[in-house]
Length: 111
Image 1 (cartoon, rainbow, N blue to C red):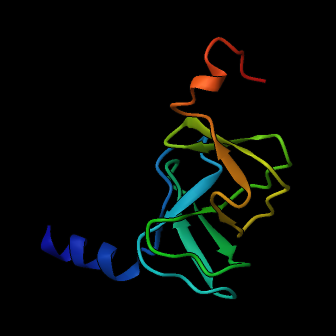
Image 2 (image 1 turned 180 degrees about the vertical axis):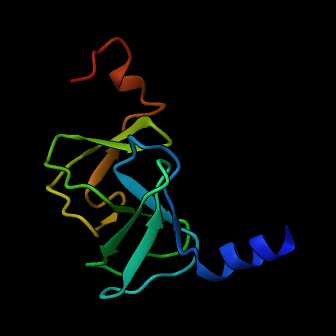
């Protein structure tokens, strides 16, 4: 198993945890212009060219998200896009707003 862990650590640059996810999470700093190869939960691979620098631990889009659409991570709606988010774009507070732990949204239905 140590060989498999070394291979994963050496090659993996971002994670997608659920087939419904619209974002991946960087597990190291990534640079605009590089192409990230992702292993998807269904066993396929996909390449995503990055439009922005992505800091370690941050998200980037793996599907186009029009303004108002849901940002999905771990198969859960975690935010709403506040601007159009093209594939390969840093997805953070500048283009998405959290939908979790928001008292101002209690009792409102998700659209």
